[in-house]
View (cartoon, one colour):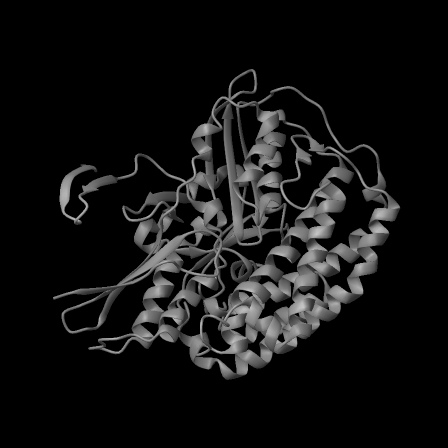
Length: 476
């Protein structure tokens, strides 16, 4: 007789989800599945809205990564207007995205994931959290909070507020920046570098004592996908799409973002509101790919800044061709924070940021546009169809976390098989937490990711006061 183990809710992630582990008749782990149980309807209720409103509306998809949606939406608008974004606006958008990467990665590492591997898997849940980290190492916790604050400060300086800045628009940005604001950012950089250096040294010590986690936390060959520059360099806002495989070989390269649908298919799981994108040429079962920090470091030829490139060289010693362990997402995030800091430092010296031409005006020149940018969690797609008046007719969003859905399912199954012995009758909480941590490796943003393709299956059950089933209706 088969058994089920349910972890509900999955904690220390953004959004609501659960994990189901299925055991076979002999007590072996047969499978595990990650379910997203919340639904957002942005694709539908944006229909009929003016194109100009879309960056501000879609930024509300999430309070953690609103900048990611803001920028991808603005880029889709650029394509529909068929304009060239002014140089200053392009660089200001990039600067804000770098701030977004810093703040989001700092949140993931220090607040959500570090309590597990810094405090210990056996630590009681009541203290295995950011408050426990503050009690155990207040200087480190404070530094992590300050690092996130630095990224948020960049967003607020440019956009007027830390969360949901309606700043990027089709054709450019709403406001520029002055030298005093850039000086404020620059004054914070030395502290941000120090904190990132401390975190890197600390996590490299963690890696020396967590070999089993490296081997079993989502360690499998897969495709990797993200944006790269014309020389294959690390990208976070422009460039073209690249797919590489588990050996590090490039599978498809320099794909125009507007052609993404020729390479990415979208499937739906009956038990989750999270779409399952896959690499079309290999089909649903063979086309699993990963996005985000691990993928970006695997697909790029180099980062392009000295400190981050030195860390990239060390990162690549953890793989043969590609780094395939999802536990290394944490290391990749810290490297990307370092890369972002180096690029922020370069932008602060760039006179183009002070130019006053920051927006190109145009009417509706195309009825379809795609905007692609790298969110902290991975590649983000906004695709819009409009009428001749610029009113939205259709929206398709492929969110970074959705791109990782198939990989997250495989990860929780792998961890469960590695840690749950056959015939187990009771499973201790620390073991369940390890399975949860497999999801935290990806830093999912479920409020962003829950979108539907086609008509979702629906089951409604009416239960009486005693729990008896009174009526049931189902739509397949």
